[in-house]
Image (cartoon, rainbow, N blue to C red; front, side):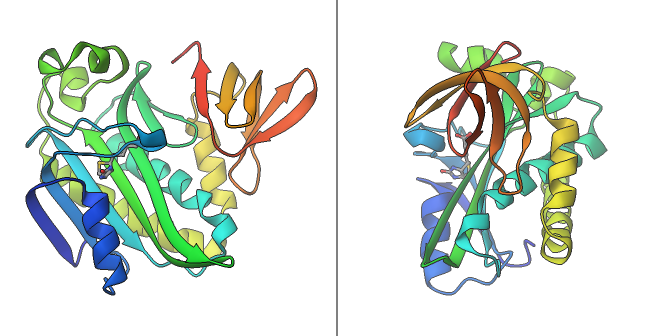
Length: 246
Ligand code: BTN
């Protein structure tokens, strides 16, 4: 991955550039990376604060030969890969929050946004967008962000070389992606479950169909989170999760 790169000093969102490039035939593993985004996109229509030179703001283009219904696997795979890269370079206690966030001491350090184009259970392409707060000075952040987010530099007390982290992430991502295509989702699911911060915890999942409160039990084979509620086990496919460790 990363053999074809579009490097931008600034852009609205690397996701937009990656969609365009994918439509024009970008090869698998191509990446778009920017120093700064003016309209970084988060999940659920939120903005992703992407000031210059402080983070890794990147979109990876994939063309997986899998059915559309398996696409959630890719988000989980990406969070496992970033978590592995961070474990190689730091000792930080990074936890995964379903489906896509990496947290340190309850605060978000990395978010992943997976977007795709396809039809009739056929994927044309997938864009895995990753935002990692690397060297941001948390003191400079707006208050709302300080409450929910952190940076690697803030947690470590020293800056990290962004290019080395990027290289590690791309290597891990490529390796877990190849492993996934060869061996399927089960090994990723195992690894994810070991690193998850929320299994066994009582959580509330806000979905478009309503809210569910229960104990987070495990992931099913589709990557949905199984929640044991008073009414029985509910699979959650897309939601905002709230829990005490949050
Ligand atoms: C989230 O809400 O947790 C997902 C955040 C994803 C942010 C990244 S930064 C690079 C890529 N380009 C974007 O506009 N968003 C993603």
